[in-house]
Image (cartoon, rainbow, N blue to C red; front, side, top):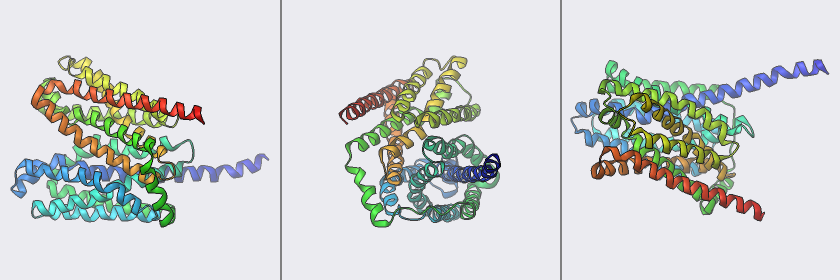
Length: 403
């Protein structure tokens, strides 16, 4: 009996190690993909000068990426839901190889726009299928932890990818930064091909029918609305955090980047906490971190001049901000039932809608009420999201009682 157990243990440990490696590869892929998405924020001045265009025209490439993700993500994810995940991931990374190479070679803004449009089509498909696959590999009860590990790639990209990419731009130019991303994408594509198992999806007909059925579910659509509100609250203030630190807190411009890096580094704790709590109660975790988010954003403005207290406010804000990424993803995936790939992609579209709306509302708030209004405005939106989450919790409770 004892001998039998001893013989069985190594294969179990080996299987867990393989699963951990596979999820790690997806996390690194996430790092490369998110860095590809956001790196351009640090490259805009350099590429604007090189392509002889104004900074506001260059900035429209960022808008193009976000709204392409929002508009095309769900449709493409539903269309590609039948493809084996190993093949799909490899194809997506190869798309990023080609698009980053095209960006590096862009002679003008139009070619650069095309180079940004193409990966924006693939990004939500990756997120939809990677989240689903991570949960599938981890097994029941561990989905939140697995998805949070993949989402660690987001946090790493936000904390290290963008600043390091900008530094690389200074060393090798903005084109060199895109070449580096192309090479990293190729490396991850090779690792996926070598290390990932075959993960067949549902047949095309079955997948298409079951995937789109969730779009008629009021409960599922309520989860999407909640994600839009949560991300709108997050990005109403976060989009202009650097400006807030410089103008309201008096942080020297040369130090703002380090404060932002600290914000993201503390946020990685939120990624872990969110992933751990969401499996137990997705809506409860959403309510908890929306409360922390609102408190942090609201306190940041009046405490801006007192840097010790500001650090505490930013820590709460950063933890909740990062925690809500995996929480919203897992919450919507669970609401999607069997159509998890489309559900996850819908959440990515909702997130991008929130990012765009947050930037717009924050800009309007600054224009009409001043920079100091952002904390209150963002917290008001977080409060609206909180009301929706509480109503959904009660709705869920009544449905359970009726059953």
